[in-house]
Length: 196
Image (tube, one colour):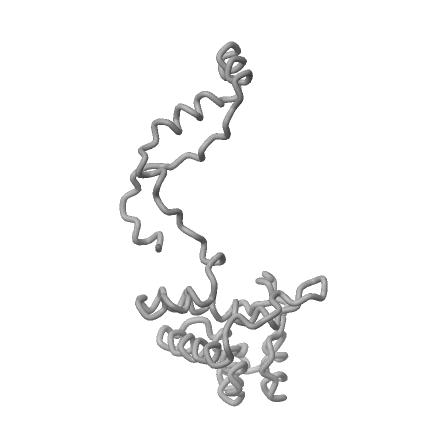
C-alpha cells in the first residue's frame, strides 16, 4: 500500500486499550476516571468492527528483499525507483560493518545475479530522471564500470573542475578497480550509504 493511494481518510483507529481489572474499574468510576482508562475502553467499543479487522500496513523496512522484488514490475517509475533504491541499500547489508565490528547481515539478501540486475535497473531509472548523480557514480563503480563512474564523477566536480573530499576518494577506488561497499563520512550518515 502506498500512502499516496489513500485518498480520503475514513477515521483514526485508536489503540486497543489494555484490560483493566475489576478493582481498577471501581476506583476509576469512583475517582472520575482520572487516567482515562474507562474513556479509552468506550472509544474502542465505538470503533466499527471492520476497522478492527483491517489489515495493518507494514513499513518498507520490515519487508524482505524478495517481497520488495516481487512488486517492482507493477509500479510506476517513481515508485519503482524508490523501491529499487531500498533494495540496493539492503542488498549491501552483508558488506556493511557496524560500530561493534559485526556485519549488518550475515548472508547476502539477494543472489549476485539479482543484485546486479537490481543495480542495472536502478541505474536506468536514475539516468531517465537525471536524479542522484552520486548514487549513479557509486552504482557504476560497484558494477565495475569504472571509467563511466569516473567520467560522471568529474562531471559533478566543483566549478574549477577539481575533485575534492569524498569525490576524490571515490575516484581513487574506481581507479583501483575497487567494487566493494564503502563508508563515506558526510554531514548526515545513513548507515554507510552514500548521500547526495
